[in-house]
Length: 255
Ligand SMILES: Nc1ncnc2c1ncn2[C@@H]1O[C@H](COP(=O)(O)OP(=O)(O)OP(=O)(O)O)[C@@H](O)[C@H]1O
Image (tube, rainbow, N blue to C red; front, top):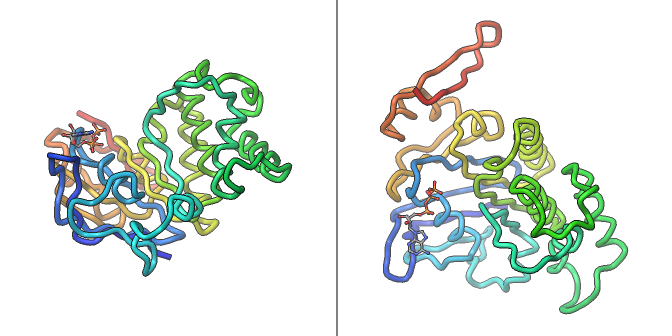
């Protein structure tokens, strides 16, 4: 299946943030979205998952228009991991993860033992089982990020869309999430994520999409698109490249 945006204009009630945007995400691939602050990455993600209506163009899941699906149908197909999550109610971590099961149960139905088993598996997968009974409001930023990832996967979607999934994580957990993104695509999911770190894009993604001021400036295999020249141009900044003598693998640093 393909999640696609066609000739999209994106933005808010009285503000156009980007236009003429075409995006395609197939199941089984990881697409990284990069670009300067305020360039429209989050707005594009929200449009692709149906949280924001496109101002022009349309979003489709396979042949069907996203706007024609119920929110329940959408939730079974696409899970979203937002950048930061306002924590108003002190639900436990387990309850937050169980919320990912909502689309699979009846309206107002209680979680089944199968739902609880899936939630427990996801808590284990992200190394946060020990936090299950802790109120979500009493977590660190990184623990919240891992909880939202666990909730998204408990949803058992085909597509996972993540806004800066590694931004609050320590080095070890950054690696854990990068491996998780790769293994999601290996198990047939389509994964789209934003990042400010080109190294994370290279490690996790097969393709990159570069967005600046609401305009697509480049798109293609990470090895072609994430180069010193193109990254310098994208950010309007000087970038340094380190190359591993043994493997030839490249890494980028802001200069
Ligand atoms: N709710 C909103 N209403 C109006 N304008 C908004 C709203 N949210 C964001 N914007 C504006 O839309 C533009 C794009 O914002 P967006 O959050 O999509 O950028 P981004 O690329 O994700 O940025 P960052 O890398 O800083 O997270 C910015 O100019 C921002 O100020």
